[in-house]
Structure formats: structure tokens, C-alpha cells
Amino acid sequence: MPRDTLTGSRIRERRVMAGLKQSELAKRADISPSYLNLIEHNRRRIGGKLLIDIAHALGVEPASLTEGAETTLLATLREAATDTEMSEVEFARVEEFAGRFPGWAALLAESQRKVEALQRSVEALTDRLTHDPHLAASLHEMLSTVTAIRSAASILAEPGDIEPEWQRRFNRNIYEDSARLAETSRSLAQYLEEADSEASETNAPQDELDAVFLKHGFHLPALEVPEASVDPATDTLGAGLSPSAKWLLHTILTRYRADAGRMPLSECADTVAASGTDPLAFARRFGCDLASAMRRLAHLPDDLLPDPVGLAICDGSGVTTFRKPLPEFPLPRLGAGCALWPLYRALARPMMLHTEVMEQSARAAARHRAFAISQPTGPAQLGDDVLFESHMLIVPEPKRDTSERIREVGLTCRICPQVTCEARREPSIMVASAPRKL
Figure 1 (cartoon, rainbow, N blue to C red):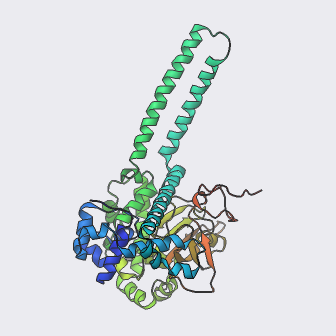
Figure 2 (cartoon, one colour):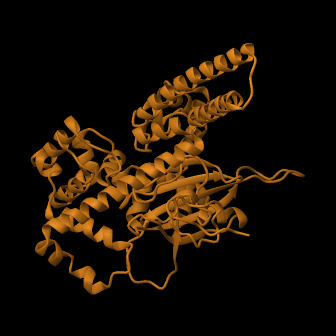
């Protein structure tokens, strides 16, 4: 069955038209609300039985979700114009443009989809290139082998006679190195071809952990009841994980259970209904610290929240230890995030709540409000330094006229197009050149 990168947008459109919540449609399709949210924001591809089940739940033909609609075309054109300095008058004429020149409009929309798909590919590949140990080792092996072959070949190419015995040795070395290079190349090609498989996404403990929480929508009903125990939950959720990933999972589940004990789900629902996703309201309501309130909000079921929320946690070195990304605000798999995020600035001013509206580069200018705070990881000890940990809650922010500063941020420097950023630590591969710091 044909499918394209905007099937999720059409599913969202049909769901809204039918008056269904994400949680209701997810339940009918037998998937988690978080996974449906990723599908609707075109962050997960969909086809086969799942597409048919969602179409059946919406009461439409599957073809209507894959063939497109006028509203989808207009939405794509508006996204393409978001990052330009187009006047409001021209921006408002998008429907006229699509009506008078449907062919050109479709071509522009297709180009926009390709740009977004390429950007996602670049983000994934640069992340793997930075943090994938197998890929780094394979590239190092290939470069070392090529250097050895070139060195032996250069000796043979030098003028003058070489003794037959040494010629045989150099030729044998070139042959053996060439065979090793071919084998390494085949292994690397096979590994890269499996990039979209589930196995290739879990090559580090943090990746395994992310896969567990994504599968369960970051909400674990087994730990919500008062008599819940962390050890059985770790064994169940951690089946098949590496020992390191299972240790990380146990640490996070211990926190989850403690937060759920202080903030019962029924009372959380009342607080959300009254105050939305404001972590300050949660902290006041339950008498807890802000970091606990942020974690609890991130682990609530999607049907309780007006909008999905994201969460990033890093230790004092800036390395990300927990991540719950949003479709329009992705987070790097391991460290190397944007230095302008409040997550890192909070480390410099502990115990102070930082809040800011952000727009992430090349993300159709989607706005998000961040709440960040750095807190000690444990009680103070006489004569010992205090270790700090920073939390950043990410909440979608509707676009509206405001005098509040909108901070332009990126994902990582390597793929950020803001060449004039003072916080840049390495050139971007998304632009032709980047300024050098002297």
C-alpha cells in the first residue's frame, strides 16, 4: 500500500474532524498515545495493518489517509514559508496560489517534504556518527587499513630495485590488507543497511532505555498503585536489556515510584484540569521540589494532558541521562545538546527556576516553553561538594503576539544553521561555511 511522509498529518486532521482525543484513537488502534503522537507528527512511518486499523477506527478508507487532501497541501506550503521573510499579505494568499497553480504548489510541497526528510536523516546520521561505537571503530579500521596499503604501495612505486624477498612481503601485505578492507567495508555496509531496524537503534544502554519508555508511552500503570514494587517491574520491563541498561532502568523506576507515591494519579488529574502543565502548580499542590514535579508531568498519561510534554535531564557534566523528546522538539541521544537551552544554563545558577520560550532552528518555527532548574542530587555532606542535576520540562507554546523574548536555539552545533551563534563550538554541516572563533 502506498504511503508518504504526511500520512500522519492526515490522520491528525481526520481525528480532529471526528472529535476524538489521541488517547481514544490510540486505544481503538491498540497502540500507545505517545506512539500515535509520533505518527501524527510524521516522526514514525505507518502502513500495513496499523494503517488499516487506524482508518477503520476513524471510519474512513485507508486510501484517504495516503492520497492526500487540500488542507494537507496548504499546511505544507505554510510550513515552507515559515522560515522565510514573507510578508503577511503574501502568506495569506497561499490558498489562491494553490488554487491557481496546483502543479507548482504540489512541486513546492514535495520539495518541502524532501527537505524535512533529509533533515531528519542528517540528524540521525550525525548522531550515530558521534555516538555509535561500532561505526566509529569500523571507520577507524578502514582508515588504518587504507593508510597501510598506501604506505606499502608507495614503497613499491619508488625508483630503484627492491629485493625479490621484500617485493613478495610488500605484495603479500597489500593483498592481506586489501582483503581486510573489503571485509570491513562489507560489514559496515550491512550495518548501515540495517539502520532502520529496531536492533540498530539500541547500540548503547541509553538507547535501550529510550526504546523501553517509548514502547510504553513513558507511563507505567504497574508503578501507580501504592503496593507497587520496583524490582518486579524492572525484571518485566528490562527483559532482554543489557546489564547496564537494566541498572539505568532500575534507577529511573525507583524515582518514578517515589514520585507516583507523593503525587497520586487521581490528584494529578485534578491539578492538570485546574492548572495545566505548570510545574509550579504541581510543586505547590503536593509540597514537592520542582524537579519531581517535572518528572511526574512527563510520566503522566497523554489523555490527562492538554498537550504532550517533553523532559530532558542532565548531570553536572551536561550529559543527558533521561530524554523524552517531542515531535517538534527532538533531543540528542547522548549529550552534545544546544548550549543555549535553559537545561545547561540552570547548572550555573542552581535552585533558580529558568523559564523561556524557544524556537528550534529548521523546525517550522514551532515554539516551546521550557522550565529548567538545577538541584542537588542528595543531601549536603560536611566537607564534600554537592552534585547537581538539571531538569528541563518542554511544553508546546501557542504562537501569539508577545513582548516576551523568543530565543532561537538548535539541536546540536553540527546541524544548526545559525552561523552567527556565539555559543557555537563546531562548524555546521548545514551551511557552506561557519565563522571561526579566534
